[in-house]
Amino acid sequence: MPLDIARRYVITGHVQGVGFRRFVEDRARAAGVRGYVRNRDDGAVEVYAAGLAGQLAALEGPLWKGPRWSRVDSVASEDAPLEACREFRIRG
View 1: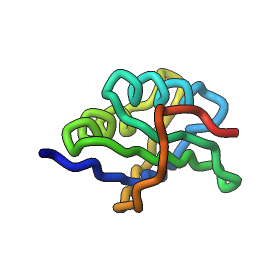
View 2 (view 1 turned 60 degrees about the vertical axis):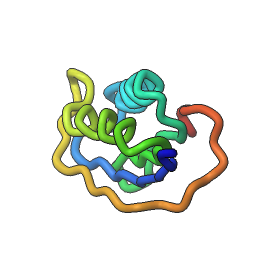
View 3 (view 1 turned 180 degrees about the horizontal axis):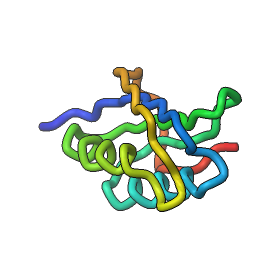
């Protein structure tokens, strides 16, 4: 039986004020990923994603693209501990 894994992504570039969080929320829900997306004080966007490896892989590609008016300079990722999340949502 496949096991859930979790990853934390930090996306930098022109990623705030361009609909990036909504873009990620839509892609994560379509992929069946649980977790959240939020703006960081340093201008980056942070994504916590939990699900099967294939689900996270389906989300990672769009993180490099972003919505039309964004510019993604980098996507850093690292393994993260599993958190209790039932769905994917935008956090403040």
